[in-house]
Every structure is written in C-alpha cells, then in structure tokens.
Image 1 (cartoon, rainbow, N blue to C red):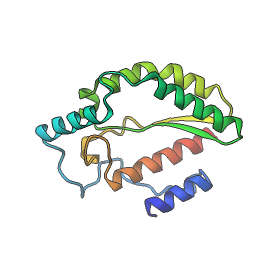
Image 2: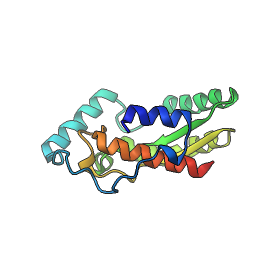
Image 3: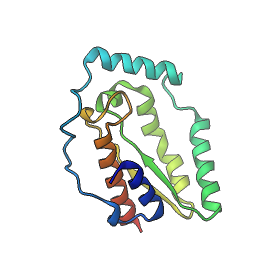
Image 4: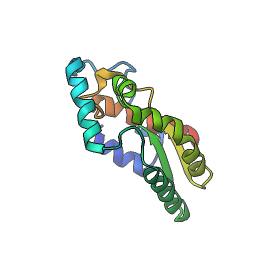
Length: 156
C-alpha cells in the first residue's frame, strides 16, 4: 500500500486493517547517515530557517491548543503526534529540549478536551531513517504510519 493510499485509509478508518507489518529495523535501501559536517550544516539551516534560537514561541503552542479546541468543539477527532527527528538533531537542538520540557502543560490542556488523542513516535529516531534534519525516507514514513495506526487503534 502506497503512503498516499495508507493516509486515505487512516483518515477513513483507523484500524489495523490498514497496517502492513514492517521490520522494526531501518530500511536497508537508504543512504548512509549524514556526515558530521552535513549534520552541522543541517542544524545551521534549521536554526536560520526557524529563527527560534533556543525556544519554541509560546504562540506556537497556544495556537496548537486553540486548534485542538476548535476541532474538538466541532465534533471531530484531534490527534497530537510527536514525530521523531534524528537523534543527532535532538542532541544538537536547544529548541527540541525546550519543547520537551514545556509541551506537557499544553498536551494536558489538549487531552482534557473530548475527542483528542496523543501518540509519541519520537523513539523512532534512528538517523539512518532520515534524509536530512527532519525528513524521513519513504520506508521510514511508512513504518511511522503503521505505528501511528496501531497506537490509535489501541486507544479506541
């Protein structure tokens, strides 16, 4: 099942019928992990692009809570998913550590609303699964989708 088809399946019916088992190991046909200079270049680009320095703006997190509230009030389901980034990005990112420390307050507010759920995929952070500082190879994205579907099915 292609990723686009899987997404359509998930949006229509979060069930294990949509899940195709995959190995828990990183995909075998991806490129080698980034070199140390490539990792540093990616972190520099990330920092310049988002200009957040060492902190996720409060407005970003408040907007997330507001969005969850809107979705909840209109009777739809809101799923807060913590997606992974490569382990070297976690280690080199002050923003990541700030987010980890501060997200609980916002997550608690979201989960207090009807029709909300949380899934944490951050442990799927093997650097061989990423093409850069944040984007997974297709095989990894498929494993993430499978895991997310399974977690959501278990929360029903």
